[in-house]
Structure formats: C-alpha cells, structure tokens
Image 1 (cartoon, rainbow, N blue to C red):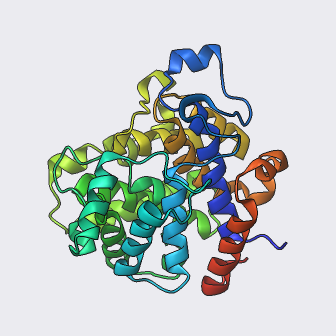
Image 2: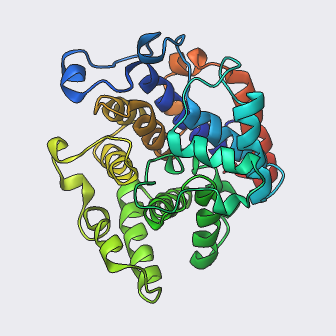
Length: 316
C-alpha cells in the first residue's frame, strides 16, 4: 500500500477518536490517575477495542461524498444515510450522536435545505462540525481564494452547526491544515494561519465580540498556555483550543493524541480533531502500527483513502 495524505489525515483522526471512546466523559483528575496509554476496550460506551465514534463516521461520510465532487446536498444525504441506514458505522449501529447533529439530521430528513439545517443560536456551538470537517482540505488544497474556502467551510459546517462561532472554528482549523499540507512545519503553519485569518477578517465586518473569543488562538500563542488553562469540553472553542494546544505542544503523533485524550471530558472528539492534524504533520508511518491494525474496518478506511486520493491526487 502506498500511503498518501488522505491516509495521514483519516487514520490520524480515527485513531485519535478510537483512543478516546472508552474514556469519554472521564475527567482530567481521573485520567491523571489512570492515563490512557494504549487502545482500550469497553469503558464508557461498551465498545470493542479500536472502535471509533460518530466523529469518524461523519468525517468518513464527508470524505466519501467528496470522492464524487463537492455537493452539499450529497454530503447531507450521506449524514442521513449514516443515521438511518448506518453506513460508516464501526459495528453496524450508531451508538453516539450529539444533540445538535441529531436535530439537524431530522431537519434534513424533512427536506430542509442542508445549509439551513444546523442550529444558528449561540447555544448551538458544540464541536459536531469541527470534528468532521478535515476531509474538506483535499477538495480545497489548490484553492487560493480564502473567500471561497470560507464559503465552502461555512456550507459544510452549517449542515449541523451554522452559528458563526462554529463556522469560524472550522475555518481556522481548515486554514491551518491547508498550511500544513503545503509543507510548513506545525509552528510555521500556525503563524501563517494567523496572518491569513487576520488579513481575511480585516474587511468582512464580522462581529467583534465573536472575534475576540478567538484571541487566545489568533492574537496570542495557544501553546504558551498551561494545561490547567486549557478546557476540553464539547464546546467548539474549547475543542479547537485544546486540539491546537496538543498539536503545538507535542513532538510526535503518539504524544499528541495521548495528550489530547488525557485532557478528559470529550476525549474522543479532542483526540479526533488533534489526531487528524497530527496525522498530516507526522504522517501515516508515524502512527503506531499496532493501533492501525486494531482500528475497526481498517481495510474499508484504506479503500476510502485510496478513492479520495485518486480524486484529488493528494500523494506527494
């Protein structure tokens, strides 16, 4: 098998997710005493070792849809099929889904326009679109117009999460991932992302109060913060901060995802979001082979990666 960037990203994401599934909802103090150091089984959701959650399922649905090109209606249909027909589930059934995502999928099933299905309220800022957005980098990797990038990210996020805070979190994450894809090291990519975002928002008239919420990422260096200043709940901004902090404060794929999971609380999602970036940074070969072999539906994921690579010629 010839690995490519899609293997880096999708395996990176799914393994981070699977490491976190057994300890989801465990707090940081518990994980200080009993840290995750390897794949575990059962635990919070009673799942076998190597089982990934809805985070990976919806990322795989997005990736599979992108294999046919960019179509928001088709992406939304894949999400609906996952929920109803249980495509891209690890064991044939959905065992974990966020409230906002469930409500959005119900709206999709009622025939609403996908970009209007996500919640627009400030309370609708869980991490459910951030956790699955990464495959979009393959479609956008040659796009140089950041307005187009923002619009595509907004459309894909809004299927389940339409508030500016969720959309902008996804935009920051995708811009950072795109800079990594260009070959910059993780801190160079972080600094470049901050410059790109600053230039982009300069004439957009975005709500200043909303933008200020991102100061710890965009005005300062998130990696300068101490662990006790980083939260790891299901709130989208906490997930973005925690994931970037883990990526920028680690030196390997393994360290990144274990650090992310051991922050506690929304362990699978922090693991997935950080793991996808770490996969792009360090590569598929840097992921422990044992973890790859333990991942549920490994061969199906390889096939998806190959199809995504064929579509977007991501190998380099």
